[in-house]
Image (cartoon, rainbow, N blue to C red; front, side, top):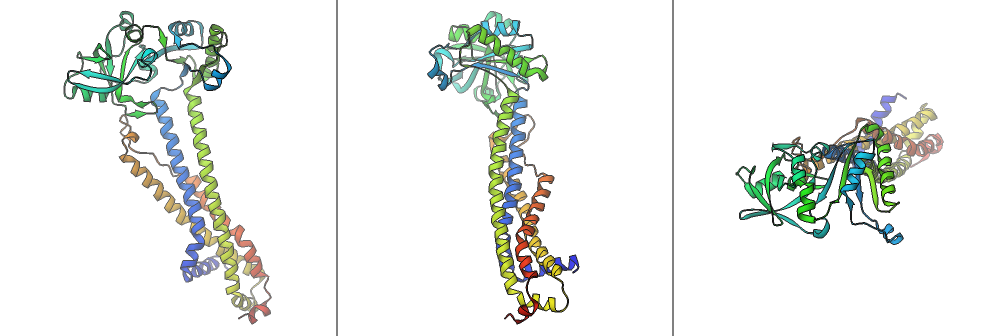
Length: 421
């Protein structure tokens, strides 16, 4: 039998039984569509997370102290937070660290849990005030729209200055020039010396509500102690970031005699962990898609067995006029593969359409907008490789589950088949 003729016959049978064919293909359509949607959204989310981490500063070592629940049950030894002595020790004794900046939110220490409000004349707005060092600007990719960042002179004199985010500027100053104006933060007047370029929401919250203050100003004028919340450290060689982390860890363990609660990690490791979570999410969705394909395959086998019964007399006539067993086998295999492949093509189209619809809807979510690049919504990636593999797999399902009906059809005795009513 001619191969293309067999495909034409298969398509003719599909057209002759439209509703039954559609129901037969439904499992394959759902399975392939789910695979396409899963890959498109997971890859888009992964790209978005990677982009966010790059914006926040890449290849950085993150150092902080936080006693976990399991550590609280093991020891009564604890400290309030890291100190400036730790910052100086890391910078002076860790040869693999190039630069660092400590960070201390004003709501740490005695003001823990407090909500801070910035005030200017009769206007006020919620803010995220943080004490930082000058290197923070470079390490954390802070872009200034106007003015300057925190300087070493500000650090030395505990200067009452600040750098504000775009939303703080809009809500407090509107059309006024904020540079040189004073805002009040928890009773302390701070002069605005810089304006941060719009950055939007990130994994750390709304960056446009940030207010950066000299670290020493926070320590001396707000908290009264040289505490440190987080230390952002830059390794001299990004390829040796794990060695730098180990060096910092060993230093802290020596200084605090193996006190539990210290965490030394890197943004690359955190990103890898998030991507692993996304990969697990993808596997779960892939398993669901696989079950849908399995159900679709069983449906194809069932319908093909019914087709063999319905077409018993046709099979007998074809054998009587010279059709060989392999011709009947090939015909039914091609029919089952055509059903599943057609379902695969429909699934590809529907899956891609659904994925792009999700991407389009997320364009209207403010949190999904990147003010630096102007990109809106979740990026959707339709992988050609995954699409081809999904299509090939759907066709393969039809062949695998069509083998038994095809063998059964090809094994029919022509005389018995001709007598079938």
